[in-house]
Length: 302
Image (cartoon, rainbow, N blue to C red; front, side):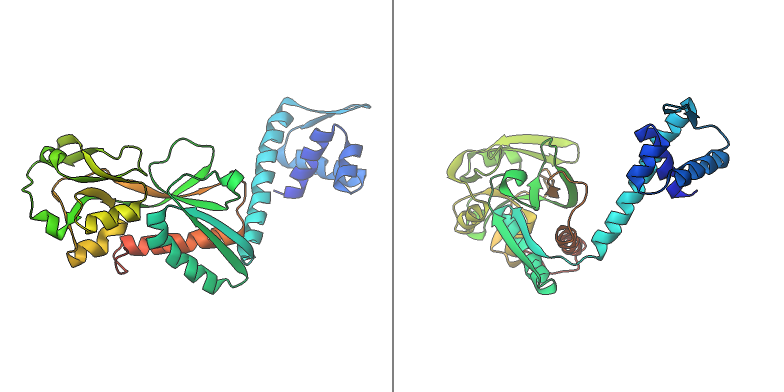
């Protein structure tokens, strides 16, 4: 099928005449008329009713016109995507990410990205508050946890687990068997979370919900880690932040046989049809790094 003929036919329907369609397309009326006639022969049906004043689509023509618009839009998108893919990242890439995941996972990718694409400058904003991408001028945000409904475009690039942990010295101060016994122990609450005190544990079909009592409340996840490491009590922290600490024995996982809910790692974008090369290349590198970690092909982050 000749895509030009589809474009000529769609232009005639939209303009309501061969003359106006030809003017919009920048070609002669004879070419438009000839190509639309050939299209009708190709499909074996009449698509347009021609009168002295106006051209109207037939019922089949109206249906075909809607299909044509979809096909032409997809063709245009395909060409645009190819053009974007061939372009090198330039300009300033603005990224927002939470403190913990941003420091442990995003910063190394930003460093590699800057080395590979020297013509592109990166501005990374770290913080646990959710930044409005449009008003903040961000190209992409990294969000960790559970996404609320949003008009933004999002892609899940990985997952993480949550661990109840404590310092190695603190672990000897109590005997834990069931999650409920944890409720009376010193707890460092992470106030960056929506529910910093309420935790649901599961083991097979068994579930227990525990409400912790905060002895210390801190609003930044890395600072929560520092407090736990210093022996202040228990807390729940993501695996990407405590892998090294658990491996070296500086932290101990409490009740490892019980699971806490897992969460997602997402890239979030402002609503747009296409993303510039600087965004797509960075996300590709971040996804590759995340997959490497999850497959065990790279040393632990933390």
